[in-house]
Image 1: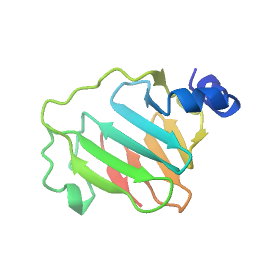
Image 2 (image 1 turned 90 degrees about the horizontal axis):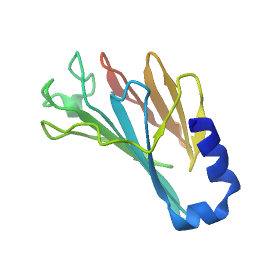
Image 3 (image 1 turned 135 degrees about the horizontal axis):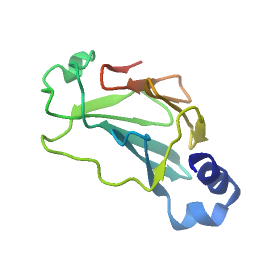
Amino acid sequence: MFRSFLIFLFLSPAYAAQADVWSFATPSGNIECWVGVDVGGSDISCTIFNRSKPASVPQLASCSLNQGVTVMMQNRGSVSTNCARPGDKPGGAQHVADYGVTGTFGGFVCRPSTRGLECQNEDGHGFFLSRAQQRVF
């Protein structure tokens, strides 16, 4: 489903002009991402809602385990992070990113797997999110 959506996104310029923001979730529903694609660049924001261990990113050390973690980046540049509000829940993403299917869109490459979600931008910066680990690079 995710792959067919990405193919549709790339082959349909009218789609991008009508709706430049869309969302996807991992099959578990524990990670949701929102993507904005525009002529001038693109951005992605992903939140992991349930975590089993504290984040390994110093900027997220203050996030308690009952808070989700949000990572954000543009198609170029570094990753920024913040704690999600306590009680934030998955919002119902538009699409499911199937495990093992690599998605390339708007300057990003994302790889969902049973281990977690990894996304990288054109500069090689990115993040990895799973229940056990949240890191940026």
